Structure formats: structure tokens, C-alpha cells
Amino acid sequence: QVQLAESGGGLVQSGGSLRLSCVASGSSFTIYDMNWYRQGPGKQRELVARITSGGRTYHADSAKGRFIISRDDAKNTMYLQMNSLMPEDTAVYYCNLFILINPSIPPRSYWGQGIQVTVSS
Image 1: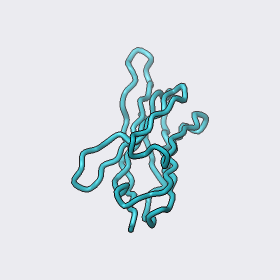
Image 2: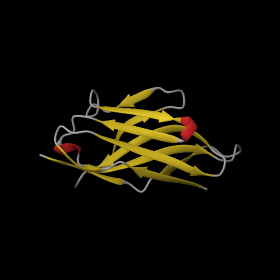
Image 3: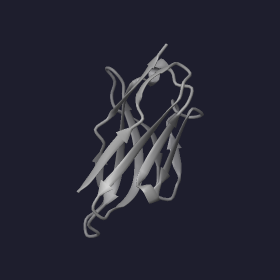
């Protein structure tokens, strides 16, 4: 089994910064694609950023130029550096990892429990 733990959320003023972390722990595993999603009040969950096992990144238009996704495979950790935060960034942020445990079974999708980010105006 693999567990994900998110940290770094909280309340910040508009224009401020936060860094989210997502750590995977458990038995022997390999992490492939890593994603950050968010779900704002009354909104559908949306993809914010993705980083592949090869280090290629994708950032949604809403995140480009402000957010940076990164990973540290030695620590089984993914980060989301969020700068110039705006009230519309207020949401619950979820990490989503594709993890291979058993080589005979394709990588599975694992989700964190979600962490609140609130940006005040």
C-alpha cells in the first residue's frame, strides 16, 4: 500500500506565496506521472499542473507564469510552488500520483486527502 500526505496549505493574502508538498510513503514502489488538481467552491475538480517521470511539465493556463511543479524522486515528493496568489486560487488542492507497485499490474492512480488553500483579497 501507498499513502500520500499533503502539506503546505493555509491562508495567505492576495499576492502571496505558498508551497505545497505531497509525499508518498509505503512499501517498494515507483512513481510515474504526478499531478496537482484543485477544486474551488462550487466548481469541478481541475488539473493545475503535471510532471512526468522524465521531468516534462504541463501547467494549466490559470497557473502558467505563477505556479511551478517539481519533483524530488529521491524523497518521493512532489511540490507546487504557488506565487502571486489570487482569491480565485482558493480551493482544495489534491495530489494525484500514478504508482507502480506490482510490475505485473499497470500503475494505479492514488489521491491525497486534499489540502485547503485560501487566498484573501
